[in-house]
Length: 229
Image (cartoon, rainbow, N blue to C red; front, side, top):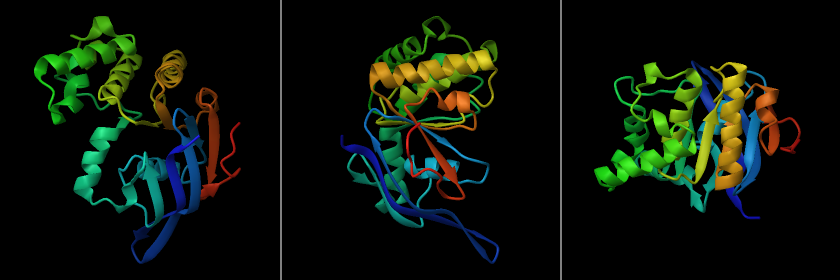
């Protein structure tokens, strides 16, 4: 199967004062379309850096990143920003919802960057909320929703523009076990039933069990050559 995401000899170095710190060392990875990958590893292993590179939030120091045929490592920041809004949905540990907007208006936010009219945006937001099981909560504001429901709204916002790739950084890190389980089951369903390709960073082995395969990073390289579990 063709890789949706292809990384070749990827390196990332940060400058800390006079010191250069190489966080990722020559990473090679292929993620096929429709895969659900969990990235695990100790704190400082480079997993969030890797996730940010795949999602176009950061640029590598060296190597190649190809996503759906586009070399995103060669894009300038304006191009990259446009590419992200067209191709990537982001889900973070903290939901980053606008507190004064309803769930539906929060979900509509990414669509404001498109040419869709108001009625079309509303319809798409309603469909996304339905997909995450919150069709009846569209008019509620974030403070009227539980943590698990807020994360569902965040996931609806991430999928509303039908992204090529869903990037999740500790999506259950702020939730109790039951809410976490519901969110992971939802991600599984988006992967299995709707064909979404998902890359998720997690420190929780139970969360990783919901993915199709788990990749362990340690000190900026793959601990097990990127093998699945």
